Length: 323
Image (cartoon, rainbow, N blue to C red):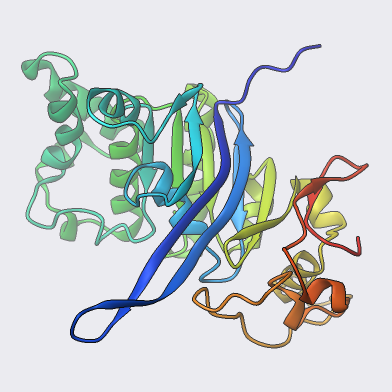
């Protein structure tokens, strides 16, 4: 059986930021935030990007929606490059939405909710102007808000309600792909469950593809279909959710899961948490970037190019010389 083509294809995505210093702002270094990331995402699928803070997860998502300009590489949505400009980019932007981590700072505090939700419709000329008020009311109802709340300002809402507004805004143009950048990390645990259930319902009803960026492995285990583990700008392991959580293969994946808390006090981790600190993205170690913290590191890991992300017999992708 022939598999359908992926909705999103990312190949060797690179995002580097210059480090400048002095009165003349001379370039003295480079922050390698994303350093050659490749993956695919299917329709109706949730792919989670996980890793420690500073690994490049959020920068990857921002580059895909055009909020950060990539240095190199490509990303294609249904075969069309997301790096195009002008009218083609505008049309493509309608097919991608983003939900930000902080549901308060991502909303304009001076605008009423109805204006925030109507803005994408006005900018892209969706429907007739007199019909857009009804569209906004339908959006609010779909995410669990009352349409009469549209006259309120963001500060009049709870954190969970504000995140519902953010989700409604991301859905306003009926996208195919939604980037979820830590969508529940700023919320109480009880509210997290409500938002995750809402996202699952929307994915089922509209066939949405989610790229979920998260450091919360409990959330990822609950919602993701596949998981990509990132370390210092590169994916080191990509596997199905069940496979990764049952038997991680990359040493960093093992240590990342070992550091996650267990809800059952009777259970104990088999591995010790990772030792040492993550290196700076402005001074990435040679060879495998994880080698200063890796218990399996050898001279081969410390020299030359990083190990490539290659397929293994069990179907996962792995970047390790020793596994």
